[in-house]
Length: 214
Image (tube, rainbow, N blue to C red):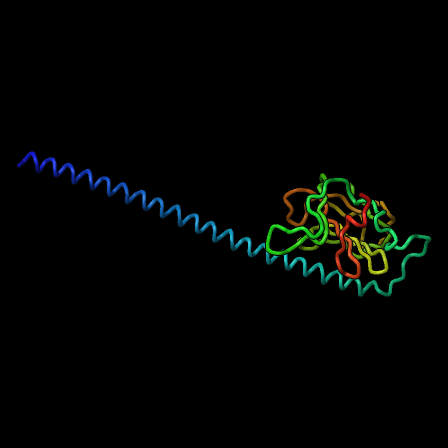
């Protein structure tokens, strides 16, 4: 009987150790799951916040362009024998050298937002040149776009150059085609250097690829 009791006692001890081990594993698994859930929740909140910020930045740019269009409506174009911007479609030189990292109309990383311009992969400090003659309508920092320069080309056409490292022109300056106006950077929260480039007609974005030489 004593021998049987010892065997049974050992078996029960082994079972207790096994149950304790299973409990520790379960608690560890639950802890990992809760940590993952917290991380996912944080990521979703960050994503929602970032998406809301991107939407807000787009609206701010839209309001800025609208205000600039109204302000520039009665300002005469600088005299000179220059072709109207509308006749230069397909002939413009690109503002910077580099591959297109994002194309016009393509899906952005978050939500249903699409690109209203193109992102050109260019090294920091590379020269940014005006695509055509015009007058600088804006040259300052804008949330989401960093150091931004906007050139008014007349007849409702504008070109935008964002995420610059430095600006070489000020509001009101006249510029010629291919004149250096800024240098490439990563301002505005970018992880890599590059130029954000838009062309707008009466406030509406158009595809730069259709306007610049292939």
